Image 1: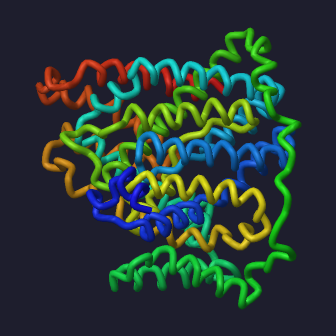
Image 2: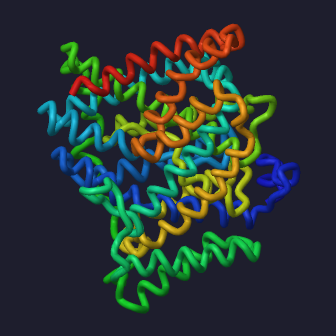
Length: 435
């Protein structure tokens, strides 16, 4: 135990082994849904759901453990939402590209990802983003995951007349309401582990009322990886058209900026940023790059840092031990998949909403009195939830930032890389609109 405390510097970070374990478990509970959502999404593309389930768990575990041991950050990784939908619905179903070829595209994008990470291009780009925009990214992620929680919990639903509207307070939505109230009270009262306790009580209420079905058994064997393992590698030769290289580039760009934005936002929340820079960011980026590469070999869409890590940070997780615990839980999740079904969207929704509240506090650090800063920052903050995409929100702000700074006669203060990103994101937006 002493060795663990020393390696992860728990005393210096003012945390304990017990708190880190609770944080790791909380993060896992908050993102365990990906074990079931990812197979469902990729299954629509014709992939074997059982194999995708196992690939998702193993790739997530590897990324979490690497992030914890190497970068020593309480940040978990898993196949990213959004990019998996692009993989299944846009590439495979929409463009009629075989899933085997699409998986090869992920593998190639992963190799490029590793290359730019080794040469520290990602690290340089992250450091070049001004602090105001980093705070905007952190706040925007908060609004995004709060919106995700409100939607998953049934409190916000699609509405043809007004785009979105208030959901119907019936059935499982009451679990979200209960969890939201209980978690809010616990946090206001400063109860340690309030978010985790709120999720546990919500799950218990769901089981007691029959709103959540009790599992019929507790343990199940891990499905075979055979249908997807190595398929992406063996189909690299299929990437032989401009259209397919556009797909590869899209995988690369979306994962790059989703992960970069998420890492910055979580680092801001946990208080890791020093002089507008994220310590050990190179190791953090290498960890998620390695997980993405491994995931493409195992048989899943791109892996990246997860915003749900903020749930573990919110309950006190500050070291890599949090991420390691989350990784171990993903491995155990392979054999306790029936039990994980108890953690429904309504159970995790209140946690996401409350974490959104916490992350939105970064708004106070933005120079709102300066319009050249306020406009791009606002576009980032509001763009993430309204476009349902972290990378799209960042794109809106990064494109406008150099323009407003030049208009304010402050163009010389803009880092050269931000001008480069201006053109990169214009190209990024163009690529997304090809289809």
